[in-house]
Image (cartoon, rainbow, N blue to C red; front, side, top):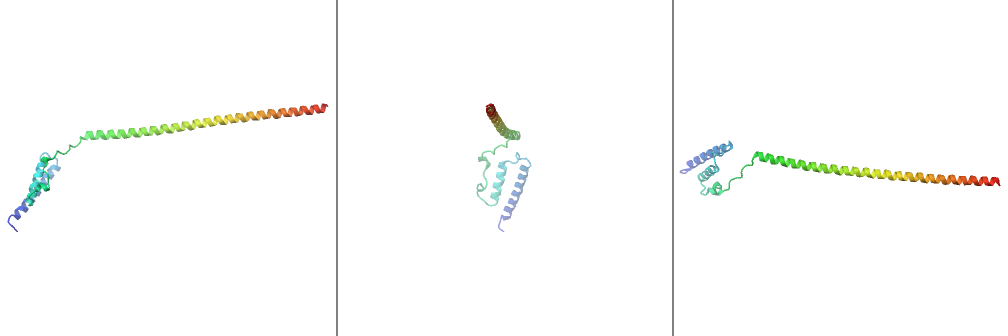
Length: 156
């Protein structure tokens, strides 16, 4: 084993432990104690300990980066969700109302057609009764004329 190899391995192990502590602190809500700069510095030192001369190939300094977007306010997110849900419900209600109105219009049109059909049928029934009555009058008149002809023949 070469000179300093054990020290480098030991530094790498210590850096790994340090980075685990940082990870646990961030996960525990202590991101104000362990900053992105702290994490970058640890990663940079780890890469250097591993023998990489340019750790920037693996990690980007957070100083030159824009801040991450802020997490949305949970109240605003909930309010927006409710607004979307309400808008969807209003749309569904409008579609249901439109369908109900279309159904009612179709039913009204059907009733109107049925009424027209009944009127036409009644007109035809009345016309038929009038034709029957007229024909009966004609037949009665013919019978009367025939009886009148028979009476004249008997008198003569």
